[in-house]
Image 1 (cartoon, rainbow, N blue to C red):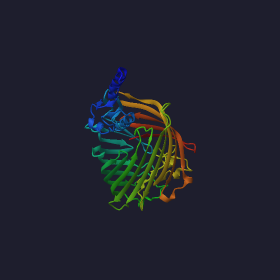
Image 2 (cartoon, helix red, strand yellow):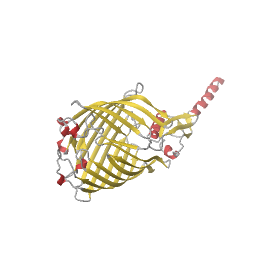
Image 3 (cartoon, rainbow, N blue to C red):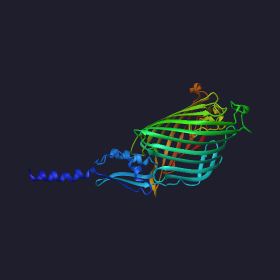
Image 4 (cartoon, rainbow, N blue to C red):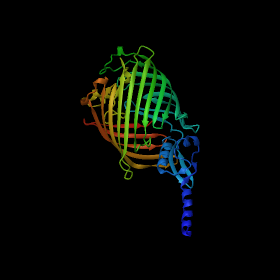
Amino acid sequence: MKLTHLFFIFSLIPVSLTSQITDIKIVGNKHSHEEIILREINHPIPGAFDSTIALEDRNRIYNLGLFSTVDIRQIDSSYTITLVETIRFLPIPIVDYNEAKGWSYGGGIAFLNFKGMNQKLILGGIGGEETTYFLNYNDPWVTGDHVSLLGNVYKLNTKNSVYSYHYKERGVNIGTGFYINKVHKFNFLLGLEAASIDTTGINNSHMNYKPNDILTDYGYIRGEFGYTFDERDIYLDPTSGEKFSFYFKPKISMGNSENYYRFQLGYSKYYQLSEKYLNPVFSANSKLYLQYSKVLPIFEYLYLGGEDYVRGYSPLPDSNATEISHLIEGFNIIYQSFQLQHTLFEKKDFSGVELGIDMVYFSDFGISADNITSFKLQEMLIGFGIGFRFFASGAGVIGIDFGFNPYGQWFIHLSDSN
């Protein structure tokens, strides 16, 4: 064999060696245990570096919500994961906005990475248009394949903005869940709920109930079964993938009220139109809410207008045009939205807090009905508009939308991802 051939063969040896990964190195996890990061890694070690698998690993770690920056690359023979941890405590005071009621303010403490194992412990209270006291605990991965544990206790006191009755509720819940193949997610919940209504001064001018017909005390054993298929790349700001969810929520009466049942279906699909100019993403979002009971309680009314459904309308029926105000309220809803979203200011890390702004263009469609069999296509509401999404790691996504409708009205809608 010629000397030049030997030289060529030996020159390839260090190249082949450096392309192999032999270990994992994690940098920047000051508070987070390595265990919660390593269990998200699917890249074979040892093995040749695969950028596609590395991107999937990066997205799973980012979806934990603990890091404002996640970068994975090969450095020498190490699979190097570089992290910047986000804030561990949510800002105080707590501010809550309900489009139908207004602003509520309070304080509390939200420990987002309790014990460094991605456990969340939230204790707080809110006062104003709605008074709430709560204690929430969530451990998303106790054992096995994402076997989770959650629990909460709460107390709520509010005034209904449509009928002016006072509503009080308190409850305790405990739940668990698990994954199958990472994209199939199941969860279960069991709880006790007690509610009461004060009908003094109630406004029944356009309701199907008479004050004397309304029960004042309710007690339920509540359950929840949920299934989610989720293959989105990023939970906070998806650019591709789809999500399907189904929830069955029965409430079994412990008093004079009737049992009732809610079925929820949701489907979202995301298409990345370009990876270059402004990174535009088109999405379609569908929702179906169905409720059944011999007599549904007044506090289970759903409102088709507003931030959660058809933007460009108010959740308060009387705030909408008279010709469609009676179409806002119902126990059942069909909803469809189409949205185009693109980058306005690219997300960047600022000392552990990732900030960025996107712009959205949307069109919403929806129908509400008191009975499952009474949906009418001619009663569909249509809304459209533009908006902004403000990203802040730890705090989620804050949305401001300017919604318009064909009746010459427009409304501002505020929303958050929490």
